[in-house]
Length: 421
Length: 89
Image (tube, rainbow over all chains, first blue to last red; front, top):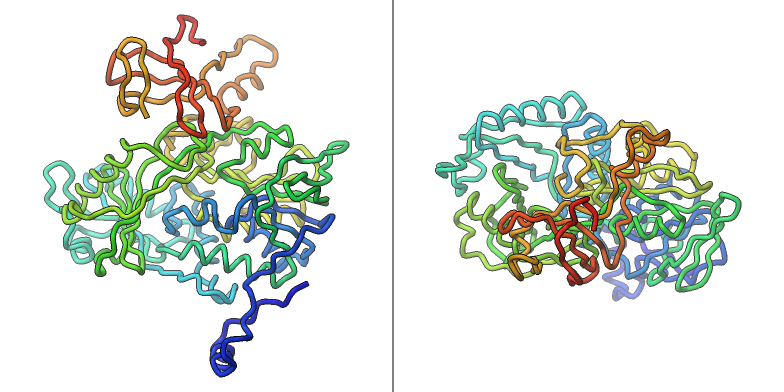
């Protein structure tokens, strides 16, 4: 076993400065897979790494491997728009995402890694009386479930966003719902921080190792075939949102999920302009500004099944229209990069964390738009599920059988149509 | 992405609305296993990474329903034809 990563502290920074910075060690090892582990997690994204970390930290199970088909952070954990919030409507969702937000608040200390948690506030502007009513309802639901929410008047919004188009003829801004504790987190640092902290607990992180088969004997999981050979597993956790359907199919499972592409954009760098996370209420557009100065923004799904990690131009146009309707001063902004990520869209728009019908096989997926912000709570709850073989109270509503039971969690009331959630 | 509509020719995907997987057959509501059959019909999808038969509605054109076979890894469209009267391909 190689050396553990040196703790990041003022003392080590100073002493390494005098030692010529020769004592720093890699943030995580690159071990070859062992023949077998107590637990194997498929998917080295945020959720898989967080699960491994909490398995070791909270449950004392450190004989764990995380297998990742690409390099660490190459999937959705590095493709999202970094927003964290808990401004949902259904109590089950608020409680879960609020736990996540609380874990985000202490994450940098927990992991000894600067995850750049920035609670800059999430502002959802509204444009009409009915929309105000809907946001009042949502804000009250949030406060009843222990999250923070605040209704802003038009003048309060004007103080925060003086350059927005308040007198737009079609969509005048009347006010906003704000969650001040929401904000952004540096997504790569989340992957790296969990990886480093899990590695320090003895977890093996095995990159460039794609799972090609799942061995099941007498209704119980035995291990996985991978591009780096067979790895035995006492328990197996799938955390491969985006690719859940075809990884679960290796175990013969069929899921209430469609894979969809969602696009994101980064503009050229600007001086500080947008201090918060802002969403447009009359179309689908949301934006924040990164520390480098680029505006990070996005909008709707493309709306059709896709594994392509790239989208099409109609959505680019739609997002740009939303941007200009809310902030006309962005009209001449140049886009630097745009990309797509593949997300599991479930039939009710809410996630799934559950046991499966196969012994020792656990499923975590269906994150829709909520994957990144859910990372810490998902990891903590999934680790609990794997360690104790029973769900904690927060994920009991996210069972796989809720569709058959009719206990769906449809935040927007859209029905079984994944591209509308 | 462009879809070659049998009536209108090759048109931008923005003119179309996506429904989802084609070839789902509505179960018999009177059958003994109707509850589980409807569960599969409404919620469960194959969601393949590869060729996918799916339904698109040409809302901005001829207003026909099309059965399109499209590769979900590349968005390349292999075929687009009118949906038959019984709703299947």
